[in-house]
Image (cartoon, rainbow, N blue to C red; front, top):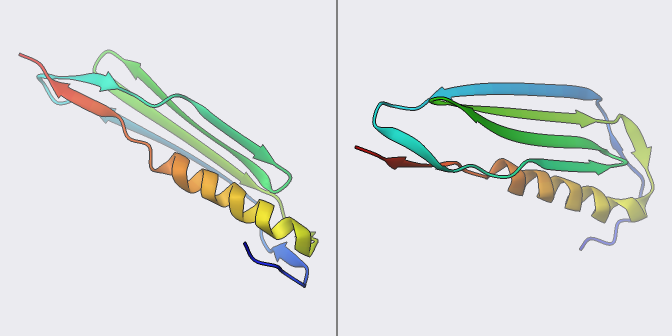
Length: 99
């Protein structure tokens, strides 16, 4: 990874909460939904949860970032934190057609 020499900062603090409800089309059922994910570090927190009820999938995602200045040696940890979030955001539910 990068051998950073200077301090870096996360210039913003935020709490981003999203909830998406998806109603399954008639004739489809949930075959797979991803497991819940919780990621926590000094840079912030992230969680993603999938729930199902009847013919609806509810996806809830929360990301909280801390506004802070970090030492250069923390940069690789910061990049790893974001890579984990990126991978978590790529999760997919799988539907199957039923008759």
